[in-house]
Amino acid sequence: MNSEEFRQFGKRSVDYVADYLDNIRDRPVLAEVKPGYLHKLLPKEMPTTPDHWTQILPDVENLIMPGITHWHSPKFNAFYPTGSSYPSIIGEMLSAAIGCIGFNWMASPACTELEVIVLDWLAKALGLPECYLNTSDGPGGGIIQGSASEATLVALLVAKEKTVDYVKEFHPEKREADIKGRLVAYASDQSNSSVEKSSLHASITIRLLPADENGSLRGSTLVEAIDKDIKEGLIPCCVIATLGSTGTCAFDRLDELGVICNEKNIWLHVDAAYAGSACICPEYRQMLNGIQYADSFDINPHKWLLVNFDCSTMWFKDTTPLISAFSVDRIYLKHDHEKQNNLAPDFRHWQIPLGRRFRALKLWFTLRLYGLSGLQSHIRNQCSLAQYFETLVRNDALFEIVRPATLGLVCFRAKGEDSFSIQLLDRLNKDGNLYMVAAHVDGKYVLRYCVCSRLTEPNDVESSWALITKTARHLLKENEKAAKGVLFLGGESVSEKKSKTICTKDEHVKTE
Image (cartoon, rainbow, N blue to C red; front, side):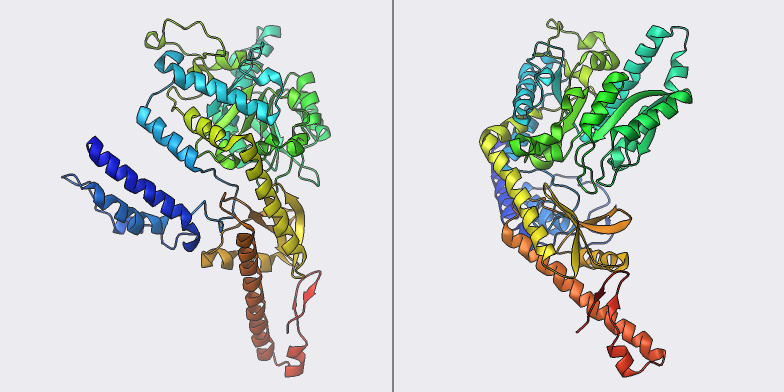
């Protein structure tokens, strides 16, 4: 493909992307295909001779799109948002065009320095303490990781090495392998699955401690677990605090956990992947109470700040143990400007992989073309839409709110036994015009409605709620007919059958 063909293909592709997003509501949110569908449609080998570019976009529409779950549809209300915006898409395209691998400053100075700058911009917008800035007088700083999962693993690996060094300082006779075998980390039982997975990769035992009635990990629970482990000869090394749990968007008590970690020399990592972005709005910044105690902190702009995946921003109060844990030098990586400072770091010492893309471009484009006010409006709008959905739920006698709307998430259920809510969610997702997932709260099966798409408007919320209530009432009628059939076979009279209700443990929903 030459530059002229690229121009034509690129322009056609941009039009396709714009049309796709403009008309995304017209597509079922969930793919209507079965496993293996694409294997039946594509050749077994690559083409021997080149295809023409004009063949590609029709194949995208006819072959690929049927197998896509449309994450940016207003009908997608599962998990949490995944960011996307036109500025970010353009930034991603330029990053691909430049194609640099910015493992150290010399590999592309702008790749490193722009990342330093935009991480400081974002830290200031979030209201983080100055010690996390690259431009502070201290050893702190920020970097773009691939995901919050990766950030958690990085934090655990740094905590592991830092703890080993600390123990050997006072007990030089201890073997490193023996110390590592006794390390233990802590998190809430509401924490993301990536926390448990990271502990496996880091070879550190993790304690998933019980959250309180609000889904929060409390200081008293942590102290009890730490004291018990120390008595058994174990060595606490890391606590992962969650701000915005996956199930219910609950918040650990960072102010309590932080004091304990600092007193006991335990690394404190804060996973605020979804909720942390809301702190660009001053009214949500109270969730950061206690952040001054954290050793590392992470949010995902690729969730709620309109930046396309992958872009997970991680800050350190002190990068010294990070660089110590991750530094591996080879002669081919050395350069004339190796004397590092946090304005021109070699980011290969701050991450797991050696290579890294120019991800700062898409973050820079998004921050510039939305501005702080535009991003704040986006966050506030999605929170208000969640509150609107909560109001609709509260006004329907068939349903109940389990947890009030928290940021963009509403947890609700049909009143009574779990079986009906399970049946309802299964029917909604099978129909493919709405996508939600479930959680367990206080032993109950709960439906999660999350405002995810930047395109969502109030009429989308109304349409989703209308679909939910219509489906629920159809199910009630189906269940009533099924129950009547069973009763008839059992020999009950017609009058007895009419008096029956579709009932649950605590409430009865009268049938018409």
